[in-house]
Length: 190
Image 1 (cartoon, helix red, strand yellow):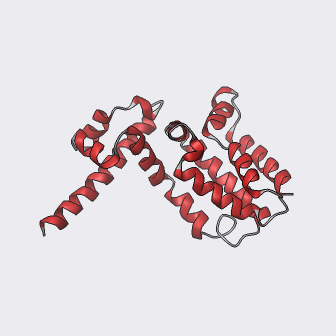
Image 2 (tube, rainbow, N blue to C red):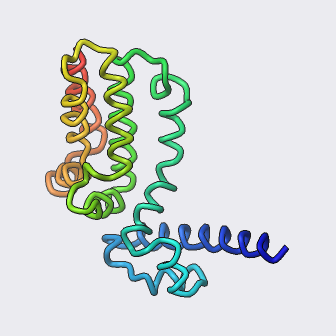
């Protein structure tokens, strides 16, 4: 019985930490500006709990990003058209890019921080590998000759630093960004 209580406490603590971090990250200019102490205090746990569970702030950023992206990932893995499986590549590729762009627009600072945490390369991150694989599968159903390269090129169009450049620096409205991305994707998949 004590082990079950410990597991329930650990699960509750994890959820409290993720909720606190998510809220603090959303209110901050950057997740990097939020200390582990602030997160621990907001979650009502000790700082040691954060480090034991997530390792460091980068691990916590990855966990919050993963939690926030669960709905998009579920829609891609098993949802209805046009995101879900079984949709022709010509339809699915633009839908995948639109979903990813919409997610990054809604989570700009978190996505930027995540891309900076990827041990020197955002392409080494688990989430990037997953998106690249999904995009490759969709592109193989089109006339695109090199699905692997095309997937990298298309995903580059939704990198968080580019989204931030277009939205914050150039002032491009989200709807325009989504329209331009859809037109680009249509040209690539023919």
